[in-house]
Image (cartoon, rainbow, N blue to C red; front, side, top):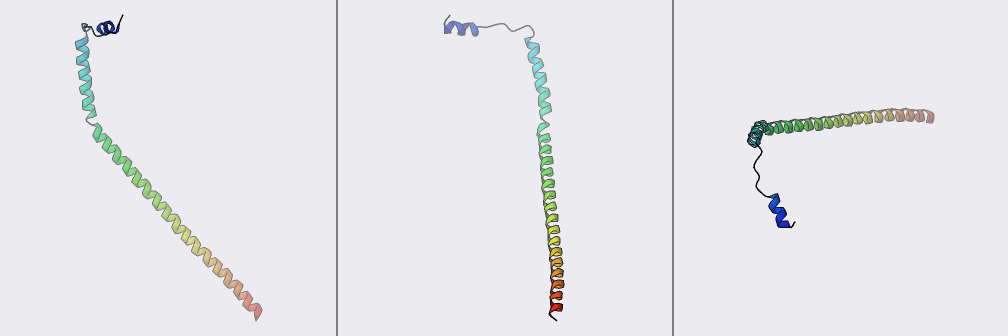
Length: 101
C-alpha cells in the first residue's frame, strides 16, 4: 500500500456514532458549566494575590520590627557595658590614687 492509499483510507468519510449528537450536547453543557465557574476565577485570583501581598507586607514589617528591637537592645547593652567598664576603671583609678598618697 502506498502513501496515497493510506491517506485515503485514513481520511475516508464515516457516519457518526448513534449517540454522537448527545455527546456533543453534553459537552456543551459541561463547557457552559465550566465557563460560569471560571467567571469567578479572576476575582478569586485577585483575592488570593491580595492575601499573599498582605502576608508579605506583614511578614516584612514584623521582620523589620524585630530587627529594630534587637538593635535597640544591643545599644542598651553596649551603654550598660560602657558604664560597667567606666565604674571598674574609676574604682581602679581610685585605688591607684590612694596608693600614691
